[in-house]
Length: 140
Image 1 (cartoon, helix red, strand yellow):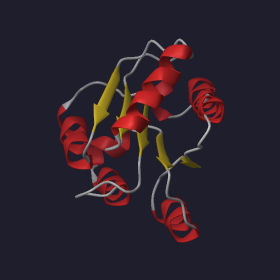
Image 2 (tube, one colour):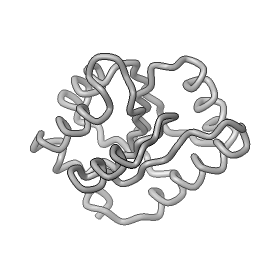
Image 3 (cartoon, rainbow, N blue to C red):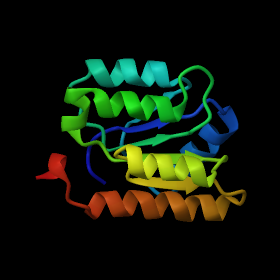
């Protein structure tokens, strides 16, 4: 994997535990930064010099939602320049939100959380493998 931290923004403790278990099982060594709120994640991103590897963000988070958070990231010149791969990873997925994410934001993926552990593991591996191999501005 590329060296930057993996940011996960999700307020569900069970989902966090599953995600962490999958990352360990896959042998992912990247530092993980977990945020229960988009506000805290945005503050971190605005103040760190670290180059995150990827951001996984739930859509339905109390307070600042995942959609609103991504809009803020897109409007922030320093964060846009970092070109951090941004994946919506959410239980709740509807066509309107998916359309908005792809047509009005610079989102690089929108995945619906699965119910079965092996399917979750397969999806997370797919996303990480793709971004590990992909070339984008912060890998050149």
